[in-house]
Figure 1 (cartoon, rainbow, N blue to C red):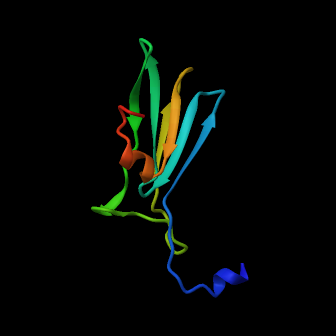
Figure 2 (cartoon, rainbow, N blue to C red):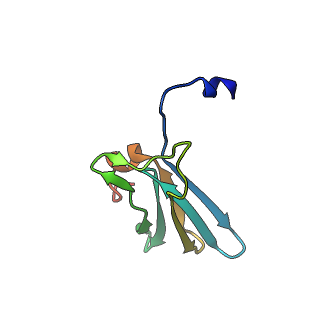
Length: 103
């Protein structure tokens, strides 16, 4: 930790955190910036997107970021899940380069 105190660089990150209650079938999500997630379900042997979180940006190519001084800047959501749902978590590298139809 002493090394970080001497670091004068301003760095940041985006993040997605998901927790699941398998007994109740509830997915809790918290995300910031351009790390997002999507939920798919199987319908007639074809997977369909039923939810995709949106990137949180200040402007074009300026996603909100986690920094050591930020507080309370996250999106929070709750989903009811059913058996067979698939959850995909990805950074902007995944969702910028592949459409939801390809995923």
